[in-house]
Length: 228
Image 1 (cartoon, rainbow, N blue to C red):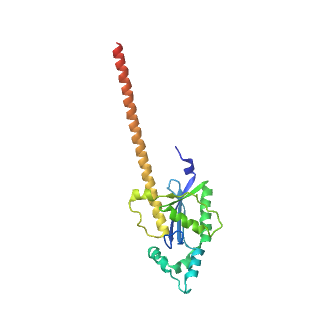
Image 2 (tube, rainbow, N blue to C red):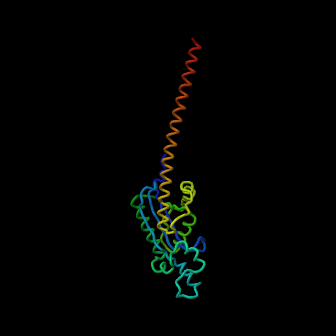
Image 3 (cartoon, rainbow, N blue to C red):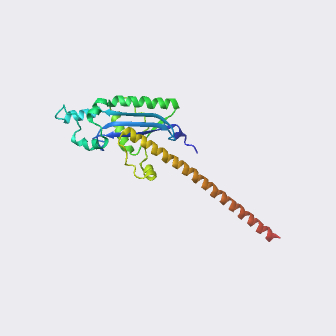
């Protein structure tokens, strides 16, 4: 049976680099998205950018004693050791969250309109983390949030398929591409497994039906023998 709701939906893989792991106290600094069809076979949109939020700017202006220094504060250095994004580079090349949201919304809605799709579902291997930072970024923009309220977490699926999935480049665009490729392989594997399972069930049912038919014929033959 076809899932019409899913067929009218698009998938959007998402990844963030942030100043830390606390969704209440840290800030997004890089975002990447890859939008695909619901079967995860065709890339429809690819977006990535460094993002400098006004909340991050306010945080640093309030806590930095020396305004001439353009370096991460001590509480953000452990994250820097992972993503290696310089604060100076972020300030120079990162776009404000407002503009990033407008760009993302424009591209997402264009694809939705072109394909007549109803929903765009966010996909992540840590959906609570990425969805929280996405909504934090969206607080600085008046444009409507273009994604479905419910995101899908692929962590369990990918862990069972590939084992340890924590090893990654820690670059939003590269991590997002890796998430897409892994999910695509996992979904392909599941489809092949389902076809194999369906074929085995079909053979099993045919054998059972043949056995039942033979049993009925045998009982009928025994009755005829008794009657004669």
